[in-house]
Length: 97
Image 1 (cartoon, rainbow, N blue to C red):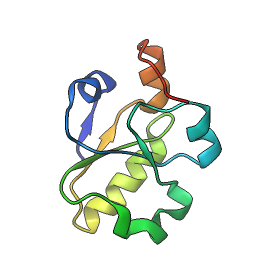
Image 2: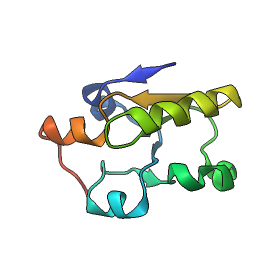
Image 3: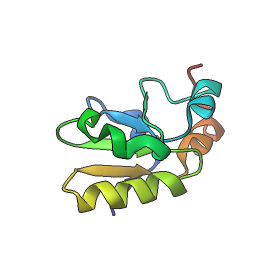
Image 4: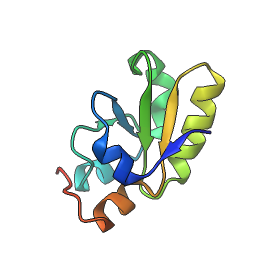
């Protein structure tokens, strides 16, 4: 499974970021530019996933890793963000609310 650090994520440009946390978690603070598609409902929103490569994030990296595994198996070019939103905040990067 492909993965990147939050430092690498911060430097990436033009790669969509999917946040698979629940809506209340997302509203409490997320990486700027992230789009919320909760893991609990992502099966209903597969048509909304980007064409081409995209990154997947959650709070700590566990849910996003499972989503990346499932989507990669379906042929998507998905990359997990190690450490998730928690690591992003710990690194001192801004969150959108």
